[in-house]
Image 1 (cartoon, rainbow, N blue to C red):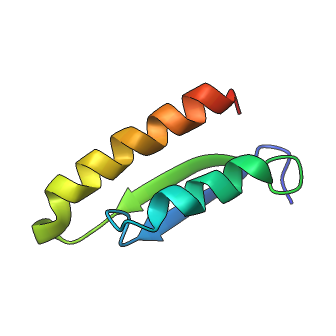
Image 2 (image 1 turned 60 degrees about the vertical axis):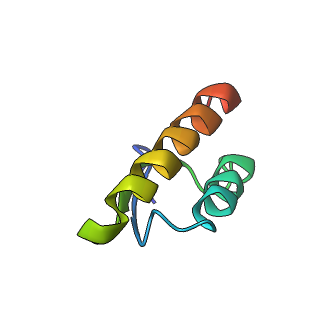
Length: 65
């Protein structure tokens, strides 16, 4: 594994399950150092993706990972 950290792409990032996934990455940062997480969804899910993406940003910022 590179010391630079992992890059993760989440297809269906607007899902209500995404915050749980983000929480898992935060809790396991020492074992699984993720540098970037990319959330993606279909056009119809754009609004939900924006909401979930903003929540994910706040979660990461609060954790100070």
